[in-house]
Length: 359
Image (cartoon, rainbow, N blue to C red; front, side, top):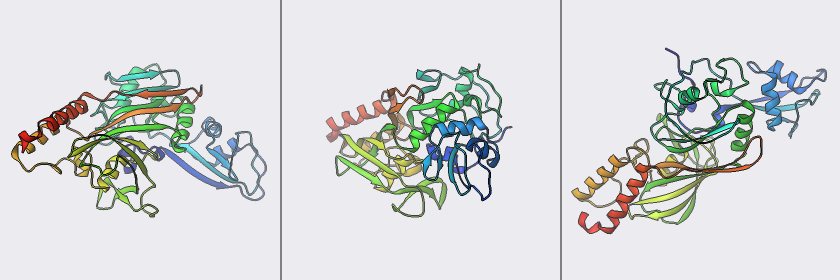
């Protein structure tokens, strides 16, 4: 059996875009003759190609002495070079599978998918088949299947993924079909120029109609399978900011719209837990118990019925606004509220009208 797609535990957890890239810093040594920077970097960085480096230059990912540079720049002794590259693929076979997927947009450079809850994005430990990547490999079977070439990302071990969303989170996900598209989209994520909004249902009645949650997000040292929040400015975790706006209140739960300023693993889930409002039915972060409400049997049964209606964390990637990596056209994608989340909201609207029956 093939090994996992990505070995690093940070990669297995969720939707952290920045973990998909390698960062290098190189200082040109004294006495080095001037050569093109793409040739120089190809000689200095293992497992890469000149085309890959040129794409990084085109995307503004190669910085010399603090300024972005083109691939024809000739290096000089003392130059300080910083470069960010998409992570080289691991050698594991991606098996094409005929799995239905909801493609909401497609052109020769990218695909936008409305992912259903329960689908894993890419093969990893415990999920070698049945993933979105397997489904994409089937649909785009005409693409080259070499696991060593980088000229077409869709058949690599991590084909075209610019970001991810968790298995049990539904909604919009973008996939690049070429390395150039992936590199440019990645830069947009890195520069925080993409507009991403989520719908979430959290426990409790949020005090303010709008707010911002700040706090570094990193691995919980007591349980490496989940994330935790560290103080902002701490050396632990990575800087993370979530903005939210209340859309509807139900007394004991709240429907909110979340706008991500950063894209850390489990960011929304762990941020809301940190302020005492874990997401509804989020078992990993304490939301799968009765946390607010009435102390009656009928109310507890109502909550259980709600958990059965939405057997996952109440989180949906609702919208995504991007600049097309090649045409530069502004594109906006919106995913309807999924049936399970819509059914849950209807249950609570009915509950609010008939609350006295549960007391």
